[in-house]
Every structure is written in structure tokens, then in C-alpha cells.
Amino acid sequence: MDRYTRVMKTDPLVKEFDYNIEYIHSYAQDSKFFTSLGMGILLGSECKKCNYRYGTYRKYCMFCGSETDDINLPLTGKIHSFTTCYYSGENFINETPYTLILVEFEGIDSLFMSRLVNKENKNVYIGMPVRAKFRRLQKFDVNDVYFVPA
Amino acid sequence: MAYKSRNVYMISGGLTKFRKYNYDEDFRLNVKNAVDYALRDIKMDIGDIDGSVSAYFSDHFLGQLIAGAMTNDYIGMSGKPSKRIEGGGATGGLAFQTAYEEIASGNMETCLVYGFENMSHVNTWRGNDLIALGSDSNFDYPLGGFYTAYYALMATRHMHEFGTTERQMALVSVKNHNNALHNPFAQAPMKINVDDVLNSPVVSTPLKMLDICLMSDGAAAAILASEDAAKSFSDKPVLIKSIGASSDTMRLADRTFGDVPLLPNETKNDYKNLKYPGVHSFKAGRLAAKMAYERAGIKNPEKEVDFAELYDAYTSAEIQAYEDMGFCRYGDGGKFIEEGRPNIDGDIPVNMEGGLQASGHAIGATGIMQAVYAFWQLQGNISRHFGNNNLQVKNHNTGIIHSHAGTGAYETVTVMEAV
View 1 (cartoon, chains in turn green, red):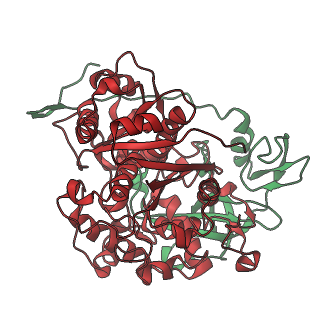
View 2 (cartoon, rainbow over the protein chains, first blue to last red):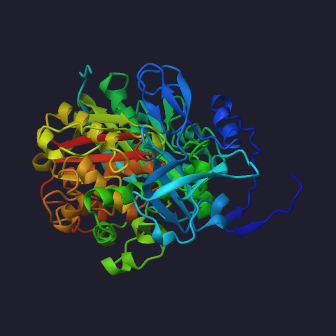
View 3 (cartoon, each protein chain N blue to C red):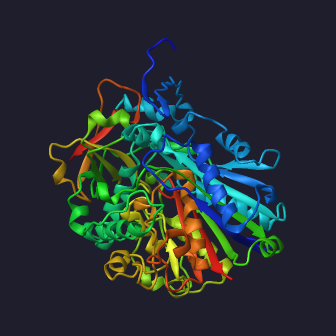
């Protein structure tokens, strides 16, 4: 590591220790969910055995362990809960304030967490109709889908 | 579930003061100070301990792996069996239960469990980010890398479902910060009122700065023993009456909508139209409490539990925990604090020493810190350790300690009893 050494204190001796990791992150069995976002498709899952319908993609049912089928989720739903963040983790601090929502879909048993892009963060409420939008230039993360007021 | 074991006692506990940063003592010395405190208090030697369990949450905070082994030799336990337990915010609670299992199973006669975290080695924003890696890194973390947001989503829904208010949440913060004024181990004692909390900067609606726990440097240690060992080392052991644990989905979005697992003092009619837990409540907390109560023979926690150390990482979470623990019905948590019932002079005091809000949250240490506080309460020894008796609860026969990982992905409840 060929860079400067930053000493912050001498008694006790405190120095900066820079340790970065470039992860090779594989979406593995979840890959199809992320590639589908580029085609404007929001995938959920349905258990072949117990027919539970998941609003967040997973390849195996958490109740019976059976493999699930992919299903297309509706692109409209309602806000189940929400929060507007004025602080965040370091990697997202420049994106504040942002609003996170849990979306409920008609006929689907569980929820989906996403960002709500809205002109006015104050006008968000539980039960508010929202619709999915997709990033035109994919970054291949879960923010390739986001929601706006319907 | 089969459940039969030897009796397990806690015979001593020790703490360091929790601080925002401590660059003078590293994690090894922090643990040593906590362990020495516990040994001194009972006149035991480190050689009297059969083995240890170490508890710390994140390898990222220190940039040091296998830190448990480093600590173990530093305190003079080299050669003895030792293992590390990790489970998010429940790390300390889980490790305490693991030490219990070491004694209950007959594997050890005496067992030391210690927890630590030195969170000051990264800045607060990076700390938030690292903690958020404890959420699904495909579906949750990239949305904002922020645990407060997940708890805020739950708080928003709790308010919607039950009418809980931000003022009621603020009352929790006021109680815990003011309690901590009398606790010399606490990181952030503060004389504050409801308006101070409501006017503190908004972090993630509805949660504000003073609704949220601290990041801390600190350590805690507890010594557990079999009945024979407890008799030979202590004249005032505390019985660990039972342990309970449960788990729930890591992703908040995967939470189910079913029926409430009832405690003996509740009926189906109490919750006719409630879809449970959704994201308003912590099912793992309820199931952990149910297991611990059944094993301890507690039929009505509202009457039989004298005090509790609850996981108040957020004020909303303490209100939710009143309900999960069965201190009141689901939906009545806000009223519970409004009526002053968890206050030091209430009928079920909660987080008398300041909780995670004000005493501090050095993650791996926290569950063990709770056990130490509960132990001192049950012994009636608060004044000896705090130098004043303001936080000693009047009734101190039965107490519980409770911790969370994630948004309740793991939860533990342990019942402790004066002997």
C-alpha cells in the first residue's frame, strides 16, 4: 500500500488504516430477478407446493423448502409503510434525503422494499398507490426498480 | 422441545464504562478490565474458570479477525476451551445463553462469557454502513445501507396500526437518558425532556437523533457456574431460571401476516383483526419470551416479572418490546410508557440503567451488559457498584434480559431470579 501515513494522535498512537475490498458479488440464483429489471419486469416467486406468493424474489419456499416458480409482480401497489431518511450509511450519504417504502401488491402474500421517488417527501402515506419504474441505464442492483406515486 | 438441564447460576459480573471512543485501551484491555472487575467482586482467580465464550459482532470495526482468541490469551485463559458467538445485536444475548449451555450440559463447572466492541475505529457513517451489511446485501443494503430506516419502517407501521405517537416514543428516551444520570458506567446520561427529543434532528422519520441508541467502545463480562461451583465461590448467586430464543426472516419484506402466538394471560379475542406480525411487531421476540416463560413457569409476565432489560436500540423498539414480552397487550405499548409503568418507580421498571439509548451499545458487549445490570439488581447491590441507590428497583426477585439481531432476525430472552 503505497500512500501517505496519517497519524491522528501520538499518545496513544492512533493512525489511519485504510483497508478496501473490491468484492466480486454474484447474484447467483437471484440473478434472473436483477437481469429482468432491465426488461421492465419485476419478478416475485410462487411456491409450487404451498402456493405462497412472495413479493421479494427467492428460489426456495421458506415454509416448505420447495423450489419456487418465477411470477411477474404487478407494477402497481400500495405503500404498506414508509420512512424518509435524512442520514444514512456512508455509501449513500450523498443521496439523502430519500424515502424507503414497503410495497404491498394485490394477490401477493409478502412485501417488497424499495425507494419512492417523489417530489415532496411530506405527502407520503400508508395506502398510497404507487407504480414501479425502471432505470434506463441499469446498474444491476435493486435500485434498478423504484416506485413513484401512481 | 425437550428441556432438562442442570441449574445454572450467575455468580459475578463486570463492566467497563461505555464511551464514544476509547483510544487508550484496546478491546483486549477493555475485556480484561471487565473480567478483572468480575473476578475481584467475588474473589475468584482466572484459573478457577473452566472455559470461555467470546462475543463480538463485527470483524469490520476493528479490522481484526479471531479477536476472541486474542482476548482469551490476554486475560490468562490460554489453553482453556473457548469459542466465539456472533448474531448481530443479539450477539451478547446469544453468547450469554451459550455460556448457560456450557454449564447446563455439564461441559463446564464455571464459564466466563465476555463481550466487546470498539466501534470508534470507524466514523459514524461507515459504522452505519457496516451495521447495514447485517441486512440482505442483494435486496436491502443497496437501498440505503441504514438500519435505522428498517426500524423506522416498523415504527411507522406500529403508529398506523395502534395509534402510537412520537411523543410516547420520546418518553422512552427521556426515561432512559434520565435514568443514566445515576449510572457511572453509562455513556450518555442526559437530563432531557420530551421536547428535547422531539426537537432533535430527524434521522429517519419518525425517528430522531434522541430516539436512537449509541455506538460505543466497551466490554462486559459474566461468570456462570453450576450449583456446586456457585456454592463454593458465592454467597449470593443468581439463578438463571430459563433461556428462550427464536428467529424470524432477515428481510423485513418477507414477514408473514398470521395470528399472534398467545401468552397464558392473553386470549384470541384480544387480537381479533390483527394481522401478525407484519412489520409492526417482532414475532421472534414474542416466541423467545414465550419459550423462556414456559420454561420458567411464568403464567402472567405482567405480574410475575419485576423488571426488564429490553433491547431499546430505538425508542420504538422498546415500546414494541413491552408488547412482545407480554407486559401489556399489543397496541398498548404507547399507553404503557405514558402511564409510567416502566419507570424506576413503576410496576415493571425497564432499562433502569439507561439501556442501549444512554448506557451504550458496544454491540457484542450489550447483551452481557444487560445480564450484569440484572444480576446487580437481583442481588440488591446497585448501590455498591453505582455509588448510589437511585436505580435499585424495589422488587427484585425476577428479571428478564432481551436482545435483537437485525430487525428481530434472532432474539433472546433470559429469565433470571434472586435465590
